[in-house]
Every structure is written in C-alpha cells, then in structure tokens.
Amino acid sequence: MKRGLAFQDEDHEEAVALVNAAQTCTDEEFPAAYRRLLDHTVDHLKREDDLMARIGFFAMEVHTSEHRRVIDEMHHYLDKLKAGDIAAVRAYVTDAVPNWFINHLDTMDTATAMFARQMGEH
Image (cartoon, rainbow, N blue to C red):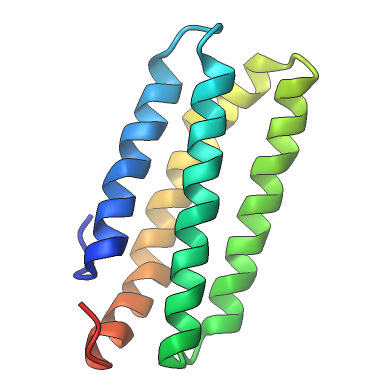
C-alpha cells in the first residue's frame, strides 16, 4: 500500500483503519464512524490536491476531478445515513469504498507519488 510519500502513506493506513472500524461497528456507532471516514477522506484528498498544485502534476485535473466525484458520492451517502438508510451506507462502505480505494491507489495515487518523488517530495 505504500507509495513513498510519508503523508500519503500515513493517511492511507488511517483510511484502512477507519474503513475497517466502520465495517465492524454497531449500527449505533456507525454514523459517527462514517463521519470520521468522510472527514478523513476530505482532509486527505485536500492534502493530495495541494501537493499536486505545488509540484505541477501533469494529470492534476483528472486526479482532482476524481477526488471531487468521490467526495460528492460520500456526501450523498451521508444524506442517506441522515435519512436512516444505514443498510445502504454500510453496503457502500463494505463494497464500493474498498474497491474505489484500491483502484485509486493503484492508478492515480501511484502516478502522483512517482511524479512527486521525482520532484523531490518524500
């Protein structure tokens, strides 16, 4: 899972822990667990966006648009959670989030980290 950028690697480890916590908590604990995951994701993606802007990453627009899409999607599921549809949000956290995360790491984050390291980031 490590890509060689300290903040990114640490954030990704925390994201895995937050997904696991949301998947295994009780229904009573789930809203707070989902909110922690959402907040962490928003903060992390902002850090990545800031990095890409700072280093002039060539594929920044594609990568940041994917960040915006997933944040919008997570807020959509937050609305579902507020409406009481815990089952739908649990399914999202169990299926869609891990699949997206793995794909995103293997593609966009890997390319970003490689470029950032070439630009002297660690």
